[in-house]
Amino acid sequence: MTNLTIQAVTIAGHDSDGSAGMPADLHAFFADGVYGHGILTAAVSGNSYGITSSQVMPQEFIAEQFKVLSKDFDIKAAKTGMLANDDVINVVADNYSPEHFGPLVVDPVIITKHGAMLLEQSAYELFRERIIPLATVITPNFYEAQKLTGIEMTTDEERVKAAHHLQDLGAKNVVIKGAHNDDSQTTVDDFVLLEDGDSFWLKKPFVKTDRLNGTGDSFSAIIAAELAKGNNVKIAVTKAKDAVYAAIANPLTVGHKFGPINHWDAQKELH
Image (cartoon, rainbow, N blue to C red):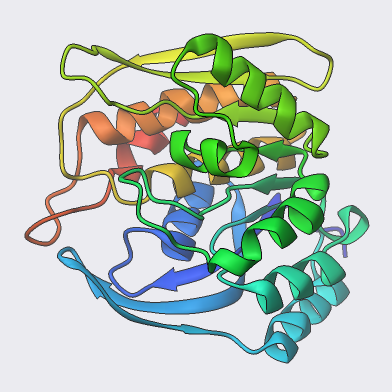
């Protein structure tokens, strides 16, 4: 039986409040008209006030999920999220293949947009060696790009330099997401460096809100969904930027503090 449904997979942790991680990825896949599968790497207990605890999945369980999905589904693209530690990084690198899972979008998920560490310190070099070379697209935030490249990025020129450094590490295409570090700043600017050397900036107005959970997850998931549809990277990252901006501009009132973006508005933008 021919299955014409476009499918993608997220390799990520599950956030119990539904605002980030795998839930955000699956919301984003759905918003972009793509059926989403999930390979669970970790489970996080938390709510809009914060994370209370987390559990990393055993290597054997993660490997089994890769195996069973590859035997049954026609997956056209994949993305990574929270990989947590050396064991998870190794099992993902050992089991991912573009033949079974399509091009890979790597969302590093190692440092939050506020600068909090999410990856064990010992795992950074392994991430650089084993995960970055697999990336069709890598989408670090400002702080993650600094950590992965060792470049301070105080100027636009240094951000361009960091993007080239990530390509030198093996990523084909790079999106370094902007940060809002200055109250006078009116836009959030992402720098895009494509495999062919073309580069450009994606700029959107800054939206002041506490409801930003899942922003990076959704951005990388929509890129993966667009690649699964057969679109090129330039189209994919542009559509992802537009959709996530729409989702941020009209956030949902869920929880009492830090809340999710609005995937319904992202869906309207994408369709």
